[in-house]
Length: 241
Image (cartoon, rainbow, N blue to C red; front, side):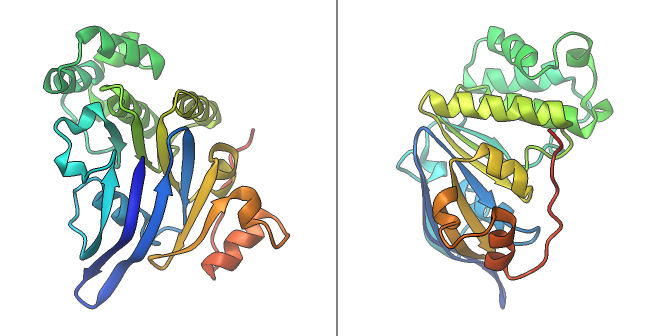
């Protein structure tokens, strides 16, 4: 469960996030959708305790993220796939975190296989990873503690179509087991295929929320409604299936 209540962030006179509120329920994937610069990443950083809010609050599993005793065992987070130690191998990155979380070493090998980084890829230094490989490693890191909640910021960036289909299946399985997924993206068509519910943000404010059918209650298609809600043109990237 994720609860965001009137969350705001100001930088001087600039309002980055303005009274954002929404809920992510267990067993669902919530798509956090908006153009680049809409306030998505700032909101996620506040939820994860990395950026202090100016006002409002965010609760994960009923408490602020920083109040969780071992956050990685309850919440899996991927905010920046490039924020990994470039000199370590993929296996070393996961093994070190496993020690911190108190996770068995066998979990590392299980996840390397799950995300397609087993074998030679696991022995490769992160500096030599492609963006797609870094995303896969970041997803493995988020899953390491077997968390009930996943918070992922643009996890499809750098993934090829096969990788995106794999990720979609992975997230749906997590939700089917009762997990909660908050998935941020500017890829409209990918969110449409993946998410159960949508939260649309523009200019730091929530401009639409609900299931796909609720958002499209006025007719039209999702792209038209997205453009109407955000009030600006935006390049919509579609992954060929």
